[in-house]
Length: 178
Image 1 (tube, rainbow, N blue to C red):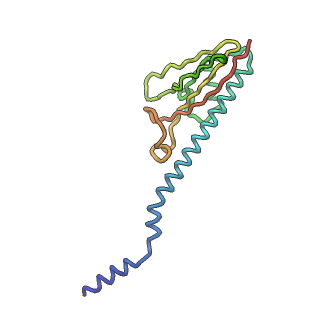
Image 2 (cartoon, rainbow, N blue to C red; image 1 turned 60 degrees about the vertical axis):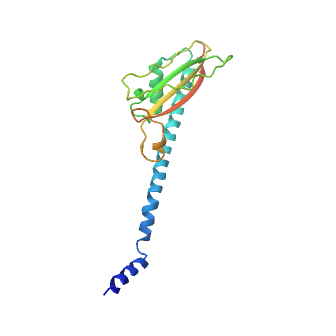
């Protein structure tokens, strides 16, 4: 009578069915985190490339349009029209335009001003349109919400109060004479 339960437990210990399930349960979350991180990184890289391209096209338009000195809102709208992958772009994009001396170059502050949608008032940015032949530095900061903010790569991104991540792009140009 007592040998029968021991016989069953020994048979269960030798049974190899279900080993693949155990391995799957251990390994699958790791692969899932890697896959979600790759998707997040790919989307972030695509957004950054589109921001760079939009800023370059806008700066090219300003540079080649002699006598055209756009104001802050016009530049923002031009960048948003080219960007295309940022919902509510006009509110999530912050621009800074700084005049830089080419002869006595002083590096601008590394602190980039970005919009924080969790705050009621937004920070004031420096925006100096510049005169003829001035070297201008244009910085754009676009905020976006990560697709997977609490998993893998999205967990490691620096977020603001509203959970948004900043992408910063910079371009320089010379204001053409009128």
